[in-house]
Length: 338
Ligand code: PHE
Image 1 (tube, protein in one colour):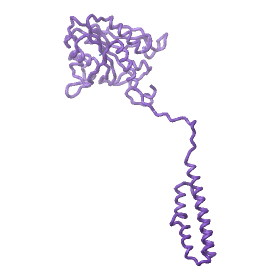
Image 2 (cartoon, helix red, strand yellow):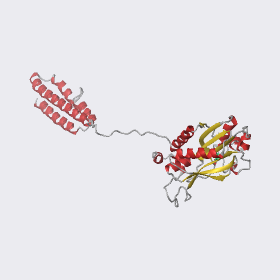
Image 3 (cartoon, protein in one colour):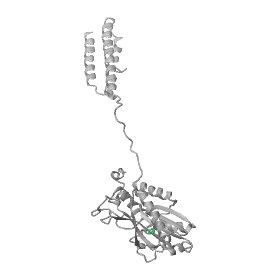
Image 4 (cartoon, protein in one colour):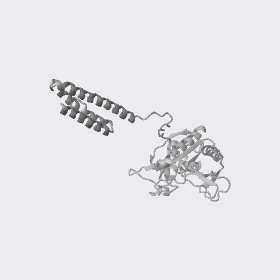
């Protein structure tokens, strides 16, 4: 009998040591399996009690039961302790985690602003295909076959003879060929040029094309509309000036400058206007009578103006950017600033 009582005492010491080493709930369950579960050491010992001689049964049974109840209690206490450790107290003052929200691309923001301004002036917004027929991109626009813009260096040609439009004027020709005047239309969209890229040139950029065809439309209307629209687009008072220029589809043709938006006063070392105080923003002019004839608009009755500018360039001015390539870079460090 002393043998048995000694075994119980040893088992108790062993179990206590094992329990003191337990660090995790998984280890605690392991402990329970070894000592307290149905096939564990203690229940197994208890099952042998009934086979003992009657005078040993009571003291051995009592000692084994005490051990079992003691370990059971220590097991439950350890379990409660370990579970409580896993739960962090709820702190209502911890700031919430902000979900990352997407937003519009800077070119989209500027395009929508431009659309808004021209909508407000009675223009319709239209769309045209990016893959275009040479007839709309060049021929109807009075761009002759030998014009350098048609060169492989400037135009992305498709194997089927079509091309990626090099300007939104292609959509201008398309619209005029399918409409009867009067109309006031704005066509924003992507254009493509087969050129080396640098800080101010991209092979893909976006333009907005405007046209206004009606009886008695004059260059003065062009100046009035653009002067008003550009101020609204850049959100400040600007001066506007026309410089004579050449585009095959307009006559007269002009380049449109706005006064430099950069700091007031001297622009001597200004990077935006390069010291001139003016920034070129658009090509424009009165639609060439030949173009009107090409698209079957009666040029004796109707006249119109057209203008085309780069959305990328306006966005660069507005956000004071110096590298056009950032727009298509997909770089989150850039995009997250808007
Ligand atoms: N299409 C010309 C360009 O891409 C711009 C332009 C449009 C000029 C309409 C005159 C009239 O440079």
